[in-house]
Length: 346
Image 1 (cartoon, rainbow, N blue to C red):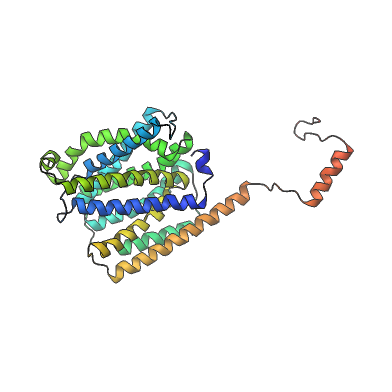
Image 2 (image 1 turned 90 degrees about the vertical axis):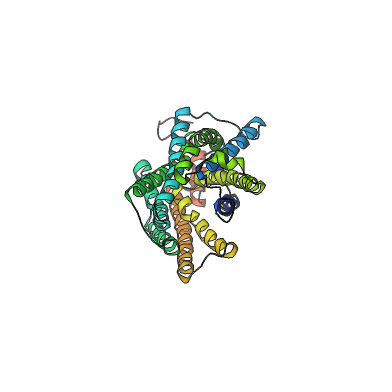
């Protein structure tokens, strides 16, 4: 994390979260119209993600070229390793959604929160308070109640789900780690990884999509409509904001916070689906959303309590009492102050 990002205000933090929620929900709504049979039947999810990163890479290149952002050195092998993990996450999620029921897919996404917690404990020896653990459980229960329906799984689907969960968790932890390790900003890191991800997804994406849907994107492009092109451009534009805000949020907070508060997007998607697409919203959905929101509020409170406790432990007081000032004044009047460590007069 750069020095500027460390000194962030609560307003900019809220802005980063708001950008992520709005862009994520927006891209889901746009993709729903683009990919649904009632929309434009664009079923090439992996290739579309390649388009997303290509546009993001273009924005990063323009930003660096115009001097709006600077470019710090990060070893290529670390960028390549990160890009491979990130692409495994994308591919694994697409395969998991295809091979498993929606219910099991949602459960696998929920499992990312405890998996991220365990991985941060293993990799960074991070500890969590009892309040944080309780809030995570409440969020998982709430989102599970409002999203999980039928749960069917098979061997291939289970393996893909495991790969997706592990890769996604590792990717999100690595975003924060790389920013801190190389003192690099969120957008700077994204502009370095986006070209690698775009190139690999655009090369291998069409083959993965053919395996998933049995359709060739080249055939679709021959008869593509202007409406589909517009929604692809909307999806790519929103993806830039979504990617930037994801790196910003994880860089400023943590992968666990991103996962927990990120489930607000699930609540928004369910609500907008009910409002815009006539999706069914049952009492079970509403109850689950209320529990999930309560868990997110508890989590936010628990994190603030942890921060306050760590500040009290980490930082000694810097202000002197009147009695201490008088003692210091007496010492200055009586003779030179000695360095207690080296025993030398200053």
